[in-house]
Amino acid sequence: MSTTHTPDQVDVRGPRFAAWVTTAVLVVTLVVASFSLVPAGILVAAQAVVFALGAALGPRRSPYGTVYAALVAPRNGPATETEPVAPLEFAQLVGFVFATVGAIGFLSGSGLVGAIATGFALFAALLNAAFGICLGCRIYPLVARFKKPPEQAPA
Image (cartoon, rainbow, N blue to C red; front, top):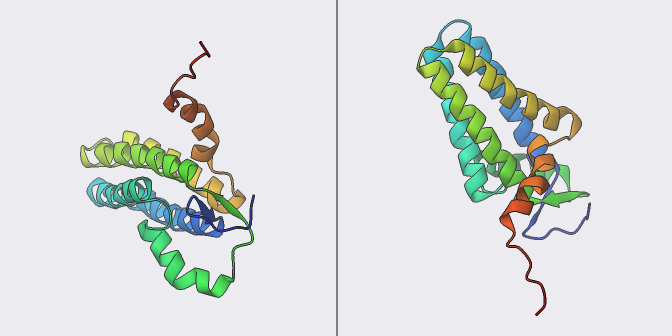
């Protein structure tokens, strides 16, 4: 990874910070779900909104990215490692899907569906936070191949 900061690259510490916050939100969601499904549904729905904003606006302008940039990054010093933005946006989209399914599950009274979907999102967030392994980023190259138009053979 490069140490040069460009618009299509971000400091790896930002997404990891976001993953830690996401992990905390999802753990609280599952704890709350053991008592009441509606508040759990509201919590995971709020996280789905955060994921949607991250997918649409990118990691720098997402809610957790904004907090990182304002409060944490100035204390960390300059970035020593960066990563591309596009896979992170895709990972946020995947998180959005799981969090949305979780919210629908909890809010419709299906605690099992809500817990499973939230658990998948939690697993991915914790993996990124604790070990720096972004599952959505790993899947992104496979999906990106389908987005590229087929190359034309020379005539």
